[in-house]
Image (tube, rainbow, N blue to C red):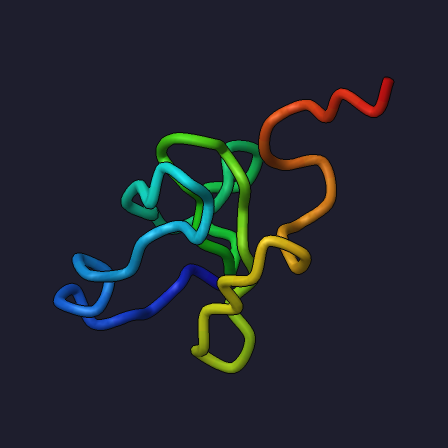
Length: 70
């Protein structure tokens, strides 16, 4: 099911990463997913019961910038 958020709310929501970029509904792999994806870093955040969970630690696995754990 696709994200159903008020368009005005979607306009003011921003990614919690340093870029604070706008979010778009869905993910790159699944445009109809219950998630919001950052237009800058690529992290996808789940939307649970209509509430976006915008915590970097809660970003969906495999989304966002590559980590340099070296």
